[in-house]
Image (cartoon, rainbow, N blue to C red):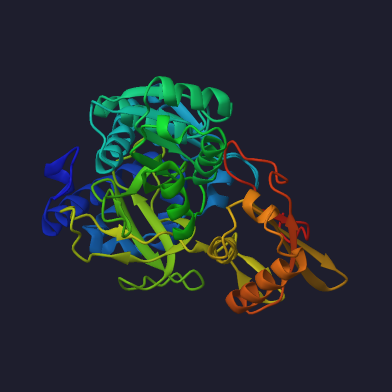
Length: 433
C-alpha cells in the first residue's frame, strides 16, 4: 500500500467514485449552462439541456470544446463566476497562437494545491522533506502548483524557479533538497552539471516530479541514474488547472487521474467516438469542480490510453498511460507520422544524452528532416569515426520511423541548454499558422 495525502478519496471504491462523479457532473453542467453563455449556446445548438445529464453515462451527449474555442473566448468569455470572485490567473505561453488565460477562485486554487499535494506524497514526500521547485513561476502553472502542493504537505519549500544552475546547485547542497520538481529536460541538465562538478556525493535527492514536456522511459532511467533518485511523472494543462491532474505512484505504470475532480475520456480524434478502455486515442477532460474556468469535454490533443487495472499502491483512480504524442503537434514528414519521442528513444538507446533537436524543412515539394544530436564527452574522445556514428543513428531511425532522415552529430555542449521546456522541434515549413 502506498502513502496518501487524502486516503479516503484516493482509495475510494470505484462505485463510490463514479457516484460522486455523476452527482458533481450533473451539478456542474447546470452551473455552466446557467452561468456561461458560450456553453448555453453550444448545448442549445446540440439540443442538450442540463436535465439530460443525469450522470457520467450521459457525458457523451455534451459537445466538445477545443483550444481554438478558448482562444476565441479570450479573455472573459468562459468565466463561470463574477470577476470579483476570481483571485488569480495563469496562462499558456502563447507560442502557438493567442494566449489562453485561465481564472481561479480561491476554492479552485485549494483544489489544485490538494491535487499537487497528492502527487508529492505519492512520490514519498512528507513534512520532513525539502522540496526544491525549479519549474517556472509567474504565469506558468508549474511553479505555483507544486509550490502550493508542497506547502500543503508541510515540506520546507524552496521556490527556486528555473535557470541559474549555479544557484540551484548551491541551495540543493546547502539546504539538503530531497525532492526536486522541474521539467525532465532541466533535470537532465542539472544532472549533467552535478556530474561535471563532482557533486553527486553531496546531493541528498530521493525523488523527482517531472512534467510539462514529453519524455521517454529511456530518459527517465537516465535521470534516475544520474541524480540517484526515483523519477515520477506528473501531468496537467493550464486550461484544466495545471500540474496535478494526474500523477505517478511508486508503481510507475501510468498516472492516476484525480477522478473526484476530472472525468477522462478517450476518443477517436477523427470521429469523436468514445473508445473503450485500453485503446489509444485523444484524451478529453471534463472538470467537475472548477468554478472560475469550467471546461466540459475539453480536447487535450494528447494521445494515450486509460486503464482500471488494479494498482499495487492501493489507489483506485483510473490511470492514463504516458502520452505517446499529440494529435495536433505530431510531425508529418514525407507522409509519415513522426513523434519526437520516437527519435529520443533511438538516441538514448544508442547511448546519447537527451540533447537533440529535430529540424524539418521543405525543399521544393519534398520534406527534409535533420536530427542534430550531441556526443557525450566520452564519445568525443573515443576515436570512433563520426561517419560511423552517423550511419548507426540513420539506420536505427529508419527502422523506428520507416523513413530516412539526415543526422548531424555535434560536439558536447553545442545545443543551447533549456531552463524551461526544451525546444526539440524546429519546423521551418510553416505548415500551420
